[in-house]
Amino acid sequence: MYPSEFYIQKGEVVEIFVTFTPKVEGLTQEKIILACDNLSSSTYILQGTGNMAELGIYGLDKMVFSSNNINSTDDIASTVSLQEPTEKQKGLKKIFFENACPGTIVSRILNIENLASVRVRFHWAISPTDTRTSGLTMDSNDNDFCFNISPANGYFEKSEIKQFTISYSARDPTPIYEYATLIIDDISLDSIRNPPESILRLRQNRIAKSEE
Image (cartoon, rainbow, N blue to C red):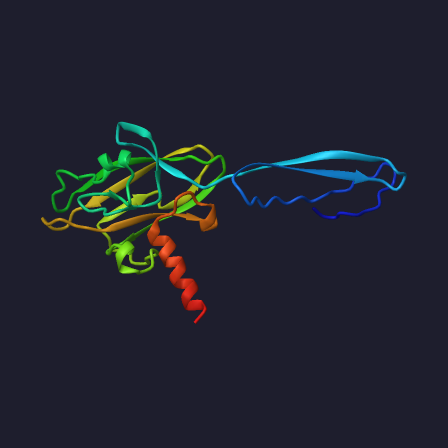
């Protein structure tokens, strides 16, 4: 809170800037006392809510599922797989793109829900390899993929259900396997609920290299 000490004349207005950096999830309250030099005082309560970023699969095409935690998707091939799925997600482990003849484009709709009550910025990254095992970066500048996800980046408003169009552009009469990761931006990994083990390992590796 700034300024913590100030002078104010009769009829004047002063702006007090308050920042909130929660250390835990949930409601936090702090009491502050405004004390004046005439021995009078007033008590105020500052209140804020700490949120964990969390996204959930809401549905596929016209099917609606219960909200389940999702950290990323991978294995967009003739399929889209869920990384480290929960029991409820196993039914959506692979999504097949049928009738995908060379030269055609087949699309499916994936609905993802923001389970947090805060705005979340995101972007998709597509890779030709499984970043969970390859150790490669999830951010790829190569746009020559058979799969495309739209919108590729943007924001989830609080509690928003956002629709993503996953399009498969068939080139050859053979199965195609590519991998996609839904990445939450601008939020500390410690503030993301149940982050994938692959991302935690990547962070540990980067810390270890920086300490060498």
